[in-house]
Length: 227
Image (tube, rainbow, N blue to C red; front, top):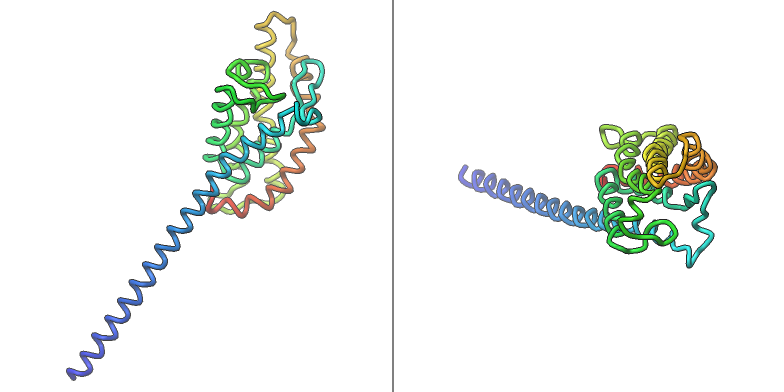
């Protein structure tokens, strides 16, 4: 009986050591995974402002920023990166990335359209669009992501990118109107709506389509861990 008791104790001790080792290995894997996710988030936070600024350098690629009549508001690839930011790194980190974009640009780094920079640009006629880049991040993510962390289908993805654009224009057009009125221009709301939104519709639809295709692949990979 003593021998049986010793064997039971030995087996129990072995099981405890195995469990302790498994838990330690699991904790190490979780720690490694958390570190990898942190690196990916940090890269995303930096990457999207970099891409937005890079594609606005008209001295290098003049065809990437096209001023549209009647106000000369430039057509750029910025909103494509804004949409993909929300779909790739989620609402919190997407907002942080866009706030960083505004802050760095306000400090003088030429990240805004046509290589502009400074606080003057933010308070200029395109400032509302820039603020919309921040505000649209949680809107896009909220539509795409279910409460369990999974991502909805194609219909929700299309609705999300259109809603993101809607938020940007909903802030950008009134801002454009107010700034030009403040500058003394006899502008109507209808003309501001046309020059600040209608002329951008074809390009908006094209960029939305690209964002949906890429986001349908990226969002399911990112929503459960990176977001």
